[in-house]
Image (cartoon, rainbow, N blue to C red):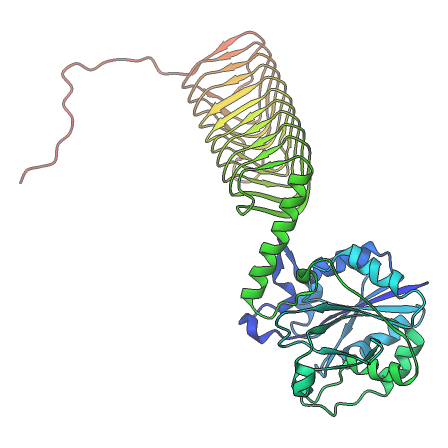
Length: 455
């Protein structure tokens, strides 16, 4: 079977009260539409077409996924009209899966279930039973339990409104039949729109058996109409992700206070304290501990490392058995070898720090190469920017850098050298040498501080 996917993403979303198109509002750190596209791509379809409208080119600009066809629905005349716009792009497929850009949490496994249950049918659909079905189209079945049609709420009779099984809009349809059915749609309804769901009645009249499948969780097929619903789905998604982490052997101190925004590959016996955010592609080795209120973004942290409270680590690689923080910022391009110590209020950017080196207090190390067993004292900075260009600092093995030192790049401090506290180093330092640049201390006796005039 050649599968085509059409994602309807043209709605304006007035209830979001936002200039941003609804499908671009993020959930788990990614636009809703991107979440749907990623799930669709897991099915490996032959074609994925996105129907967009409100927001126009901004939607196309922000969604950078590959292997997409784009179709503009200039006037939003209903779901049937939207699918009709996409049909010219789907002529080579056998079946068409209809998804929605504002139903962001549909699972790959659920879509596979729908595809498998509809293998011998020209039309399959997802349905759910709701305690409160208000707002949804109702699934009307005949005496034998077969689907006879779907009625939208505004067009439903009192008896139909009492039905609790509802349509969620996600359907798998034979392309040839869909082509015929769409041509016969009309807008003779309360909304004056072309409903895709009207093809159900057409299918029944033609004797087509309609297959149905259901998701495991209601939140998979919940749509977003306002920011309240968006926040509710965010919590549901986070709950599901955190529960999976805990089943995989991760300790989460408070499951309600952690966010996973991306792809977290977390090993056994990792501990995550409260208010930790894992953003992007994050990999945590066995036994890693992450302190409260830390943000890890696109980073790899090896086994046994401790990230203390209030740290930010971004686009960095941290080796085994390191200690980072508290209050440390590890910026892009940083690589820490095993057993490094990065302490409180230390910032590191685009630096490679070798095994066993320590930068423990109030220092900035940027655009630098630091050797093994180096000790960098408090208040040290690499002066790497001259106002136009960045320059590199190279520090050899076993170097001791005293507190309050400025290393003015480009500069090299060779192995075994010592930098006296309070020095400004502007020239290379030889191996095993002591470098200092201080004025001689003197004392002025009976010194009187300046005072303001009393008059």
